[in-house]
Image 1 (spheres, helix red, strand yellow):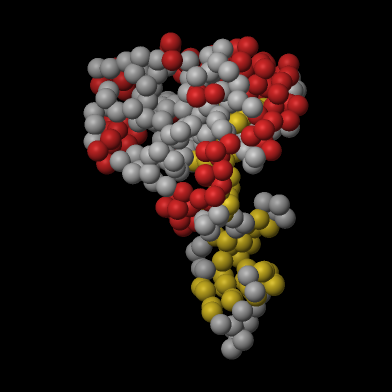
Image 2 (image 1 turned 90 degrees about the vertical axis):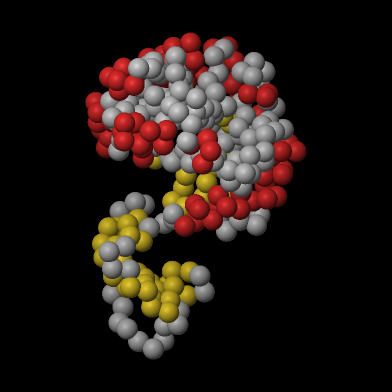
Length: 323
């Protein structure tokens, strides 16, 4: 048996939050409560100052496999996730080839069997991420896709979005959307604001996100589809999601740790390490995201884990392409 002493146990389901001991036997929790030190334990772990919780779930990761394994692969990504306490992850579809077919999906599922965590896969919404023709969602769901997303690229055709939502509603699968209108972005990855002005470059306006979120929330109301707004960064978008929920939309939102802990000011401190899509925004946007997390408008914290090579990261702010 293993005894874990003095850890802070946090379990949202049971609403437990207390410092307590845990006994594990045969890889199962035998007891949660105060336990005395005896010779019956094979191992005793002092967890003072540590949190013990159910395995974390990350619904938005990029393991770069297949096609970009010089950055990461399923094996190394899974190890990193496990080290951080994550036991289930959902991989995005922007690999090479794109996960819009059974063969690529099966390759990932096969590779994931050797992982120590649950590696789930979302498939593309549109063939080749071209935003025009829907994949065979029914077939890919039967093959193991847990959801659908063109993450990394927005889908600009509203009719495509509408039909995707109708099909997703029929199949009872979630759709996740990357919400940035490229026609409203001059330089991606940096907020259009005071910091971009200081740097002498244009940026990505929050309006680029807001118009897409508004459109997809309204279509979600009409179709009843289960929709996830990915990596929300704009305070206006938070308000839009809140309104859509009140109007009956089955819409969810995710926020990344960087979007509710950092702002555009951090670009001055961290350079290209603070460049991402969507960009870090203002203090007011950050506070709106925090408020959304507190009141349940935003239900999901997702990392958008997306490794890049060192060589990519040392490019200047205008040249670096991020995804």
